[in-house]
Image (cartoon, rainbow, N blue to C red; front, top):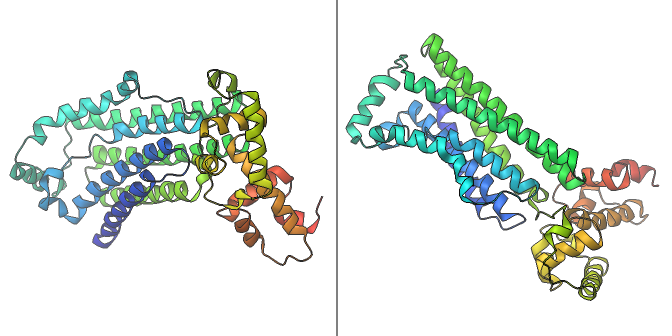
Length: 373
């Protein structure tokens, strides 16, 4: 048991590292990166406190007791803000946005009397209740735990219907579809977390710690796996967080200084950059770096793609990548593997390549190589 908990504690530390890496990640939508990073960090800190109870490490840091208890009231708002930023960039930091944090603030205020206690009192609380598995639960604890579960469930439903609305009401391109699927997986992960959390609460209510070791260990392992998955996938899949291109171009660009003559010149530069310089082969290419290379303001580049070509950055680049990949796949002189071709034309992994290839070519790369159309 101690070994398993120590592994979870180590996972929490690595989750903090993943969160820091994602927070400092400069590729794509920086705001979305940071919101997801904050969510990972809070999850990791919650996991760390959970694991510290079972290892007994909490006795050396009594002021950490219940320090993350209110964090679950932030999971839902952060997921919502992340989804809004990821899908259409409409989440703003207005005063009204802070209203989402009211439940978190209420619980912090509720716990302030405990937080103000000296370390020896907090250590006594741990030793006399948690450590000895005192199964008596006060009404305050039950109310908070239940409220947290309901709160997160409501936000999961909001994000679910928000993402469904984007799919149903907007032009569905590959970027939107990828983000929709990613959010659906995140919602499923939070739903499973909720189920385990509710099982944890029910076990306390009806059995009073009788099966707490099994339930807690399952909850901790899931949190560790969840943190690893969303952190790793966010870093390895840059297409998730490429800069948002507005689907309401005329509204977004109505005050733009871009003239028709400039737009034509910028389109010419883009064509040269893609067809002659083949900048799309750079797997780290994003809207900002492309704008720098062709000496165009990123806002103007986004406008040219959106209004002149009716595509977002992701689709614009991937079409060039897939066209070159098709040529390489049927070339008699090419004996490269499909993965090798994918990496050379600018993809980071085979899964992203296969998905994009099937969208633009209507076949998988293997099918196309066997029967090119």
